[in-house]
Image (tube, rainbow, N blue to C red; front, side, top):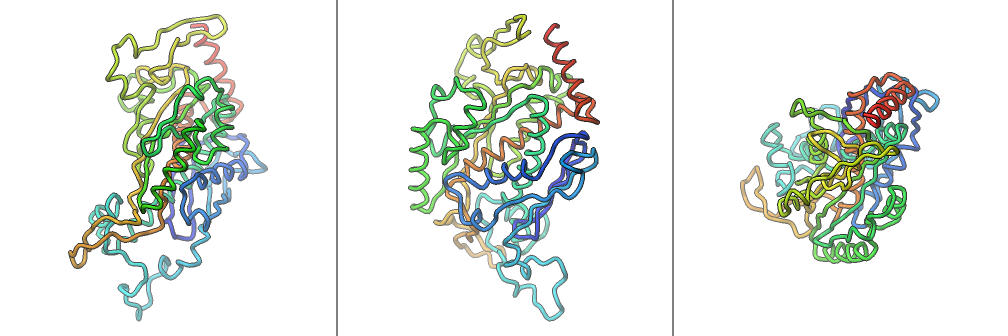
Length: 393
């Protein structure tokens, strides 16, 4: 399985093409739209979410609600395009139009964004050419692709959920949700304003977001993704680029504004002896091999262990501030305060949705690499045989 996304933030549409999905997998636009709606939610989102009501069109690869095995094309139209047709148009400018007269040109790069370095790399004097693609709007299609991947995983008995564990230094108490099933955790998270499973922490997070918005500043945080039902042995120890934790870490770090990742106990492992880090192995006739704890987050030696995969990512505060930081105009070289595009005081809840979907996508890709996946039924049979084998190993 592989995919590409395309489109600019204020262009006519966003597009993704997915190749390698098995045939006969149930897939509808509604399955994807439910996830796109979650990406646009969460306390702290800005005005763009009121403009765009993301709805996907499936324009290839699906017939009568099931995949064909051919490439699947997903499209999301940008409703705001009607206000940007002259600014972001595809056709060459007329001879009597001076490029410098085009509205909304940007020559003042925003600290923390791709503007300046992207302009240097691709030779753009109008930095809008950079920010239109580097915008987090691109994550719309990452979620759309991930929604397809989640449907694929669900068919195999693999579930995912994501939730917010920290915003602006306010952290959750894991004891409040550690005993919940994934279904129970998801039900709480999807009904919480910041997608948090700890009600007391959630209330404080909402207040912190409101406070920071009033001060013209922004907040970051930490999100956690949990994957349950994955069989052991996905990934490999034999080459560095086949290690599953490396693939998942790369997926998490590919999300806009993410700057750190950890599994299980994560960086707390540096504070503990080995006896309090590694997971003891046990066996039962009902479960086969399992771990008595899950401090390594479901991964050993670059492979899944069969325990829940637990991965966390940290998102920096959004760098577009309503009390903007200083920058330098690339034309005049004079200092200015940075320009402001639409901004959210906190997008951590939405980022948790993106994180869940990029992790689901990476898991789906890895499973398709491990098993023959021309048809959904054939894949189910192969994985069922493999589960039976590893249980009795």
